[in-house]
Structures are given as structure tokens and as C-alpha cells.
Image (tube, rainbow over all chains, first blue to last red; front, side, top):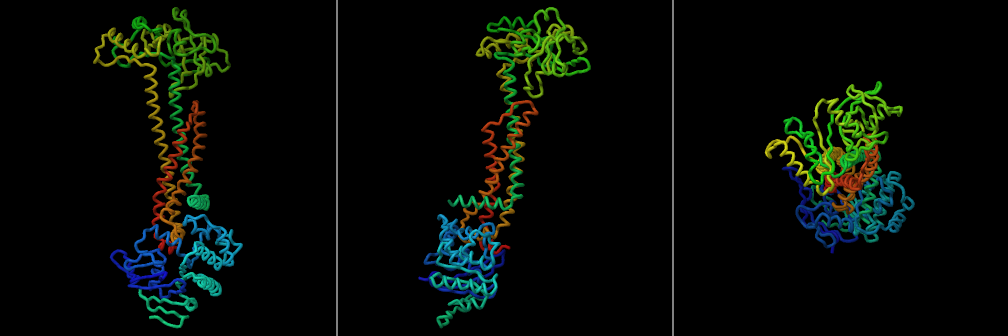
Amino acid sequence: MPLIELQNITKIYKSGEVETVALRDVSLFIEEGEFVSVIGPSGSGKSTLMNIIGCLDTPTRGNYFLAGKSVSKLSDSELAMLRNKMIGFVFQQFNLLQRATVLENVLLPQLYSGNRPNKKEAMALLERLKIAGLESKYPNQLSGGQQQRVAIARALINKPKLILADEPTGSLDTKTGEEILKIFEELNEEGVTIVIVTHEPYIARKARRTVALRDGSIEFDEHINEGYVKQ
Amino acid sequence: MKSYLIFLTSIRSLLANKLRTLLTLLGIIIGVATVLMMISVGTSASSAVTSSIKGLGSNLIFIYNLPNSPENKQINESDLSAIGRIPHVKKVLPQVSFSATIQYGSSTMDIQVNGTEPDFEEMRNAHPVLGRFITSVDIASSAKVAVIGYGVYEELFKDGSFFGKVVRINGMPFTVVGVLEKKGSQSLGYNPDDMVIVPITTAQQRILGSNRIDLISVEIDSESLVPIISNEIESLLKRRHMIESQEDESFRILTQEEIISTASQITGILTVLLAGIASISLLVGGIGIMNILLVTVTERTKEIGLRKAIGAKKSDIMLQFLIESITLCSIGGLLGILLGYLGSILIARFGGWIPVVSPSTIALSFSFAVLVGLFFGIYPAYKAASLNPIDALRYE
């Protein structure tokens, strides 16, 4: 059973009388443990695809199954719960709460899962992401790379099956970007499914599979490291 | 646990903008303080009026002439003995009242003169603290003697010696024989300490040149009989003055209880009116809260988007902003109560009455503040909760 199963997804945005087709009949399967990069020029539907995979948006037509569960018919709060438990988000702008400490930022998803915040686990994550000792600092006291590590720790705190990263290295220099990418590779080796939207060719090359979008459709979908190309 | 953490989040956001929070608070503080003070003023006035009416003495019935009624239908001296013959009537006291100017040396003062009889002392609770009250001898001889209220005494005899001093009431010399004990300004508009008592005969014959009577006070031997006797007096007087039942009243009979109920009705309206006006300021404070919360929602659009992305439900976001609003109003409410309490004490000191701030007044003002927070918080909270996480995340 694939972790992500998109069947003939179409997304149409309406503004007044004008209809914009953001995704046109897209079908995509991603197995658990894959490392997928999504590339494409702006306006190709990358963000819409990510939003739908991330359960932030629902498709106009088509079915989406996340871990075998149909997402299309879920209510607002059921979607929120699903995001909380299944998906870890990493953003280009880090999106940390400036008024909260590093530790509080990492624990934030647990605020909404109804569990008691697990400080020990958060500290272990910081340690693992090589930012131990920064837990009581505020985001503006950290470098970009450190901030993104905090954001990754936040994405991991609820042990999600899927990490969705939207241009995670877009605000970082190449060296730091590569370090961040390394973290994703390590996570992937531990079995976490990773989907990265990116412009950077070097990231796309690292991924085992690249999905290219153009004008709302899949242009190509290739498994690089396994030596074959699927059209 | 979750609500507690969301509460912490709200507090943090309030602390992040201290000046803004303080200014917003100010609106609520002033609103609550004003409401509290106005209710307190109203309640104080009400209890002052009630106690001053009770201070008139108990078991009393008052009969007074209405202005502009025909003279032959008004109560007069001949009614006194007729009323006195009704069973259970203990005392009948005539009284004539008018405003006058009193002068001693170079000081003058506007006062109310009551021409009456010695029974006034007991029936109306007007005991001399210095000297003596008027006597039946004074009445018989139309003596030019006066018993002055404490306020008059303080105003005219600053050096303290008063006995045997001659004051002039509307130009006529009177010898001061006594000073009434201090009552404190107990009712609105009328100060019982600014009163002078003279023998009724002196007032009628020497000052007014008429035998008119303005007020008859009747004391009954039992409180329970007051309504019955008051009816009896009414029919007696109507008979004596040949007043048909459908005719306009020329006099009015009031029992003490009726006076109290009328007075407390008036002060009750006063309280509601004052509190109503004051709540407008609380309303303005509430609008201030809503305004600032809307700004906050816009400022924190991205944060809200993030929270939603990582799993915050609509209700979580709603709760966060509602808690913020209610916390703000509760703090403002508490500070406002403190300020209002001090204000009430201060106003009472100026007004010379006892401040009344009842627990129910405090509870009322506080819950009003919380309600304002809830009401004006709902829209911004709803707006925040309804933000689309995708748009919110992209918001710069």
C-alpha cells in the first residue's frame, strides 16, 4: 500500500468568473520510505500539489489516500489532526515563533495533539540535529541553518511518517543547504518518507526520485538512483 | 493541559506588546471603574435618602397642602384637634416652613425656617446638642427665640459662643437658645443642618402674618395601624373641607413607608441611569479591544497559518484569541474595580456620604468586563480561526 496515493487529482481555483486549473488529472503514488523531489517552474502546480499532499487543501476532483485513508471527505478538524500526527512540515522561511524559545517551538505540535509535551524527546531531537544547548535561545539569536534545524526538530516531534519540505534550503547558503539536505537523507535512511519541493538541481539529484510538473500535469517522473526512468 | 498551554501563549502575546496592552487595558479599566463608581454613588444616595427618611421618626403620617389649591379646602389649624380625636393618634404636630436669610454680625446665610411646637423634638428626631429646644412657654408668648441647626451654628458662630446671641431672621431679631445635633447632609439637595426652628406662633404672627399651616405630622401608637389611620384621616379631612371624591386633591397624605418607597424608586432609577451612562465607556473600551485584536490577527497571520499547518484546529485558534481578549478584560476588570473602589471612597468623601460598594456591585462590574471581552473577542477570534492556512503561510 502506497503512503501517498493521488488518483486523477484536479484542482481548480475560482476567482470571480475566472477559473484557473492548477492541477490537471494528476495521479501519483509514493511508497513509504521514498525520497522524492518535486521540481517545476513557478506556476506549474508544485505548491498546489504540496498543499494537497500536506492536507492543507482539498482537491476539486479526484481521490487522495494518505496511508490508505481517504482524505477528500475529511472535516476541517480531522484534517488538522491528520497534519498533526502524520506530517511534518519544513518551510523555506523556517516559520518559527519568534516569541517562543527553541524548545517551545519544537514542542509546539504537541500542544495541538493533546499529549503532555515530551521535553526529553525534544531535547534528544536537538541533540541529534546538533543544536543541543540552544533550547532556551530565541530564533532571532540563531543562524539560518540552526533555525532550519529547529524547524526540522519541530517537524519530527510527533514522529510523522511523512516530511514535506517546501524549498527547505531556499534561504540558506549552499554549504548549509547541503548540511540540511544531509539530515533529510539520514531521516530517509531511517524510513521516513520525504517529499521536497525545490529549485536546486543538486537537491533534485540527491533524491531517488524526481517528479517534474509543468502546467499542472506531470511532465516526467524518474527514479534516478535505481537506474530506470518511468514515464 | 492544552487550555493551560494555550493560555500561556495568549499571555505571552499580551506581554510582547506591553504598551499596546496597557493602553487597551486602560479603556477597560476606566470603563469598569466608572460603572462601579456610578453604581456606588447611586446605592449610597439611595441608602442615605432611606436612612434620612427613617430618621424623621417612626409611625408617622404626614399631611401637607398642595400648592394652588383653594384655601378653604386646605388643611388648617382647626383640623389639628379633629385629627387628635381619632383613636390611636398620639400626637399631632403643625408646622409652617419657609426660606429666609439669617444674619449674625457680618455673616449671612440662606436657611429653611420651621415654625413648630415642642413635640417636633421627639417626633422628628431633632434634639439640641447645646442649649434647649423651644418650649410651650415660647409658643404661648410667641417668643422670638430660635434653635439653630448645626450647619448654621458652624457658619455663624465660628468662635463657639452662641448662647443668648441675637441673630436676625429676615431682619427680625431672635435670641438663639439651642443648637441641634449634627445630622450630616443626608439627602440630595436638602441639608437638615441648615435649618432654624422657631415657635409656630412666632412664625405665623410675627413673620408671616398668617395662620397658615404647611405640614401636619401625626404620630400613631402602632406601626401596623398606620395605613388604617391614614385612610381615616383622609376621609375626616375630606368631610371637614367638603371635598368630593372626584375633586382634585388639595392636600396629600403620605406615610413614611410611602416616602421611602417613592424615594428608593427615584434613587433606583438614578442608579440605573448612572450605570447605563457609565457602561457606554466600557463599551468604548470593548471596541478598543476588538480593534487591537483585529490588528493582532493581521500581524500574526503567518503564525496562525503555521499553527494550523502543524495541526491547530479552528477551535484551538479561536480559543487562543478569546482567551487573550478575556484575559485582557479580566485584568482590566480587576484593576478597574480597584480604581472604582478608591474613586467611590473619594466621591463619598466629597459628597459627605458613606461609600457603598457591595460585593454584588463588584461581581456585576467584573462579569460585565468579562462579557465585554467575550463579546468583542468573538469576531477577531473567528476571523483568525477562519484564515486559510495556505494563504496565511504565504502572507508577508
